[in-house]
Image (tube, rainbow, N blue to C red; front, side):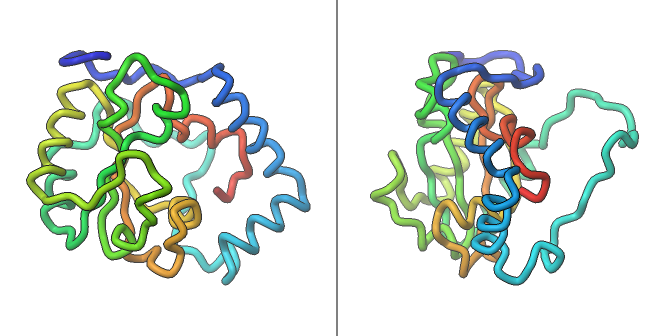
Length: 190
């Protein structure tokens, strides 16, 4: 497990048993019947009615300077949140990560976080702002890259779809386990 180290910004490509299962399931998601079933479940109002912004493929977005989300940004959202839930990293847990601390996992913010069934997720508990801020500090020191956002698939997975507009995540990604790297194998609308 890394302690204080250089940020882990290399391209992510996993070839573990767990990652291969996720890739296989994601590829099934491209099959028309599976794709339609998922869209109906995850997007009952239709994909076109969502608030996501598409990013054009093969269009330059400027120069890449190996910059990560500043610590002050994640601190801001933690301090602003009414409910904070911390849990072990499901990606590192499933992958049995030996490079980073599994306890430096996801931070869920907002009313939706209070509706997550804690018994389903290892290490999940409602936290204080101070505890969440300390975890953020440790994640940065550990070289983990923060990923902040609102994904509808998170609301579906954590069964808080009714609160998706009040549900935000801060994940602490590592190059060896992060499930976000496997999204490229699934359908584009995810």
